[in-house]
Image 1: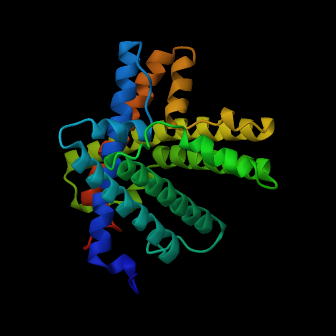
Image 2 (image 1 turned 90 degrees about the horizontal axis):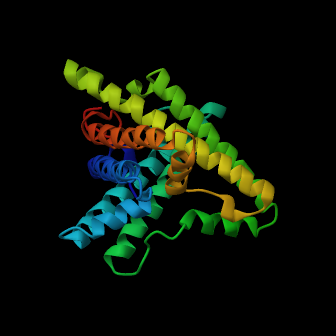
Length: 270
């Protein structure tokens, strides 16, 4: 698309728009699941449910199209990070794993963008267990169970990475912290830590479910974000835990919104 897309102003602008769209989706996932926990009778939510709620608002179709464009922008930026490596993570094993994670994140965001466009155009795309579809399709292939199991291990590795990133504040190296006021820095770091821990919990549950699905050769045992949060709710002290995790996902959404202003790589002055 561009010789050096990581230096293109439009690509960076789309990246910042993407951070905002992703942030909005996470805030909605957390808020809907928080509502479910506090009401005692509602259902947890994932990305599809969050996008569906947007479509129910006034000017819902326009909101869905805007969020879809933002998520596509985020997906494009993640692929730029993976292919061009403007963050200089390198080509060693750790760097390659990071770049594969970026590429996978881009694919997931693109899929959610497609869902937003489908709902906006009245073509469905609501809550329908899309994660089960791909798991089932992979399992039908030669060595499909092995591939799904490997995917589960990869998701658990991402979960561990999220937790370590939170505990050691590794997210700070991606931010223009010098541009923040002291109160902003305090709140950005709080939102990032709490949000990353919650994502780590959710991804850990999803990864473990993928491994169980692979061992049982049963795609129905896999879980998406909504089902992972439902698992939290069904655990001992589930309501309290769901409140904490859902609030953490809201915090992650707020952190993503901060990234529109303070991300090093997505900012023209970075």
